[in-house]
Length: 398
Image 1 (cartoon, rainbow, N blue to C red):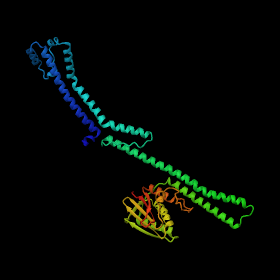
Image 2: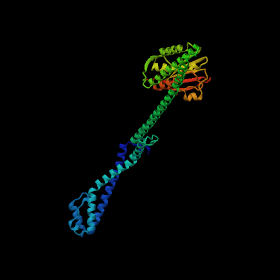
Image 3: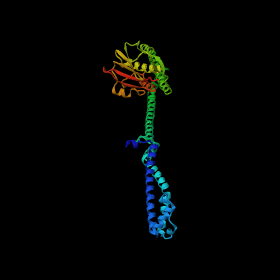
Image 4: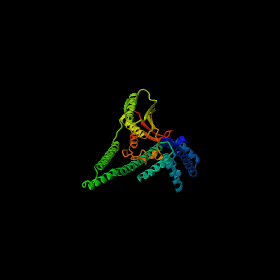
């Protein structure tokens, strides 16, 4: 039964035509037989001599009695009603094949439309109207596997993709709102400080009532706030640059790649007393297809973050898993709070207790964007010893 329900449209229409045309042929044969019997009955009632009628039949040598004409002598005796019946029978005998064939084809088309087209077309029409009203929650469910089922499935995939795109755009808009809010907040603080120092100097410097030492302290603070603004400006430029960033994968030798990683981390950790341990899995001698610059930028951001919070050591693990390259960096610091795990990859997110004015909470956000552009992802958590654990995944498929 399911096989019949899931027939392709052309096969279904052919099947319906065969069924209804067969019914039409049967009805045509039955109609011919009935008309013949009716005509014979009328003839026999109105013929004076049965022997003459039989002789007339033999002379006419009719192969099919269905088309046997009525003798003229008999036609004169027929009533109006009998003549109408005879004419109707003659009409049916001549045209019943065409009428039943046409009726069967029409019935086949109507049944085909009701069984195969009406429901999916109604679903598609309703969903298209809802999507036109920006309502994307109109799920289409049509369980047949014919062409209309495939069309409904494709339409449903399109609807789901539109929902994903809408969600992505919504998140981008919210992200931009957060960026603007954070930008306004973070740039206001150093500007307020600078404005306060300028007013202080304008008030007391002409009177020479500020000691030289105090003046130097003020100038140092002004310089610090200026540097802070420069760092902030650089961070803004970096986030804007990522919108137009394109991934450029190239083949690189695995051994050369690992040496480059260790060299970069060594340069980052030479000024701190933090031990770095490396662990590699399933990285055979050969080549990797990866954007090295993107990978290094992500790795350096995460390592820099780990070095800020580590007490004695950090662990760097790299593993190849099918078409993905996994980078796992763990430290022995205080780890991420539940709030950090949820929000740390958002732009300008900082711990409530973090008083470091040189970091604007963009590092992990940049890592997240770069990983997604490289077909991967980033995941935050804590290791079994309580320290922070960051795993990033890159798609290395050629």
